[in-house]
Image (cartoon, rainbow, N blue to C red; front, side, top):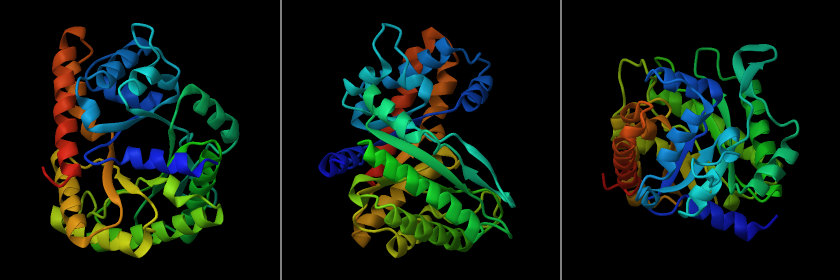
Length: 334
């Protein structure tokens, strides 16, 4: 393990004003996105859409890395240049999603666990050879009257830690993603409680697996009200409660946090990120608070593109605009 290289890559991914584009949609997810704009999900269409994003002029000012799906990391752009090189030539670090999705947790019908550890060591070596600099693994934690259970948290945290340890062994920075879902009518206090419990378990498991904290990033949910809650917390409260939760659970040696958008509306997630960075400056938080957004960055350009080559310029402008606004929020300047 090259500890210095891992730490440098992690720090580069959370460089000032920059964050990560999540473009790692599975086949089913990208099909649903394309269905929404009446475009067939063919290999060429997927390549053309993602190439448009990756080649958008000036976006490297705001995007430090891109999480790819297995298809994309092996794919060439229309001119024959590998997608990895398209990104690397612009100083953007290519990453790769390595989990295999969720399945029901045995004897816990209301909870899920993420698969993909089998054969992961060999896959990580191949991804390193293909030019990846970092990896990502998502666990899903639901909030209800019955969940999460200590069993569900332990199973998911253990898988996250195993993934992280194997990634670092392969020379890749792991992005550890324990997503606390926003689904439900719970208030922000309940989200705080579950997020705190989740992060405590995750970092205990990371310690047991001897994961280098300086060479990893955390991709958590913000501490927010449930999506159908009668009373939604405003951005200032989200920022205050999220940082309070992190102070209790997140070691200072972790270089940064790359928040997921979690299905929040674009304006809402940007306002929350902006408030978080303003609050972090006041609180002198030790971590960089950045982003790893998919839908929040891609919604506008996907609609503008609509599968038509003549719309490429308009779609690229829409992506640049969203990336710039998010980069400003990353600095607390939106």
